[in-house]
Length: 245
Image 1 (cartoon, rainbow, N blue to C red):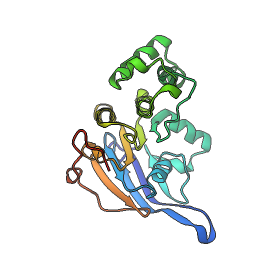
Image 2: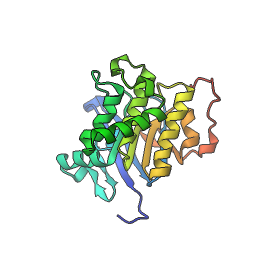
Image 3: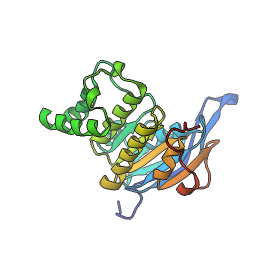
């Protein structure tokens, strides 16, 4: 891949669900590009296709038509096992449902990424996990199992897990949806630093206006189609204490 080429290129993506008279066209001829070190935010109402687009771009859901090229590789022409290895090596995910193991503590959730994903020693894993838990404001909650954490705490653990292995790409679905103002800002800044300091390409979907000032590009998805780009300065984030609509 050329150094000047986009890290991700999606062309003419289509995705539908259902059959016959019940077909719902969720993505309609969607094309976009994402550069290394860039934060791209896709905004839109619930049901607009944001999560479907994220799943297609990240190799979790096959499109009906179209192409996704990442780091010069055609994602949907790979064999399934190769695609899984590619995701494991290059991608980090923040899902709406957190996807945590209920029987593991917050610290253990993160240690798994470093020890089993990278083969790091226990000592190195605990050091790195301790650092990111401190940044997430979770040091005093590290010993608690996932089923004893609040929704906001689970969200922060999920963000830490996604960023711990320094992925080339991070795909985040409503990363601030369960968070108050203070912790929402903290998570946004942590995600942005992955792009600024590590050169990660960050693809975020959501409708929280707090996300807008931190994005390099903001696109709107409605009825399965990307509309005109919204300048990040055009939408003001709410002030502390204000509840996002």
